[in-house]
Image (tube, rainbow, N blue to C red; front, side, top):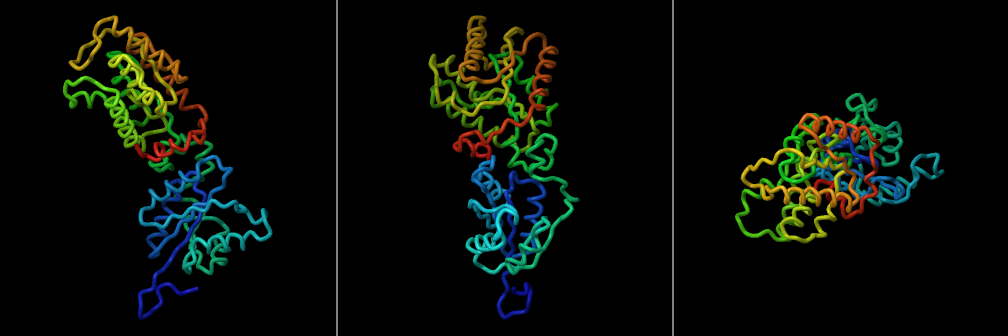
Length: 354
């Protein structure tokens, strides 16, 4: 092993190495990697995954790259033994795999696991342990998987959308969606994902709506949500979503836009009844009773057709608040639903990309 920092005519490049399965990455992982990066010139982090694991491998590798700018994050997806008892040649198998990925000499092996010294020996490196007793970050990935909401403070913002449950406030115009969403968000660690359509309406002019424009509106709303979600709590409150934009397409264009109906859906929709007085604020379209009733009917039909989970919210304002709060609390208390069932095409949304 080279002696890092030894005098030489040429500057000595020190290299560090650590590995993990990061399922999911948590605050302890990030702190470990950041400390390691500060102590060497070049740090390599190897994300080790197995096909049978319940969290997408490529998504975890992407998270680690985004969490660690300037660090060489590599992905090892080989079927490797996980403990020395799994295979008599456990250490030689891992040494060979690491050397193939990282052929350069390694000066320091970083980690917080008990077998760090043996790993360092295999790599002819010095062991540099970090937070072995997990005093700074008393958390493990398995604890987060078992109880994401209870361990929320340890989940990096980039990873939080994977575990967030989205509650979408849904319904026709002037049924109190925005005010109810604000109150719900305040009680669930906010911020609220506001309806982007109201922002967009004030800038678009008076040209007729088109399907392409509604699709663009949905795309902007999702980008708005992706920017806010990392700052939210275990329950993210959203004032309308692209599924409601699909209802607007029926109201404004007289036709369905399948692309809007195919966007990722929320975990729970709160369908607000149109049983409160209509208030015209200058940008609402359907003030007459017939238009409003049709809008409400199409909202419910959309939720039914797409198989969305929803709960009807009705009555006076206080009653609506109580029903909505109770529904959101029930959702929060439910076990994590398992988003690994989502198609790979949707992983960028969970990684914070619109």
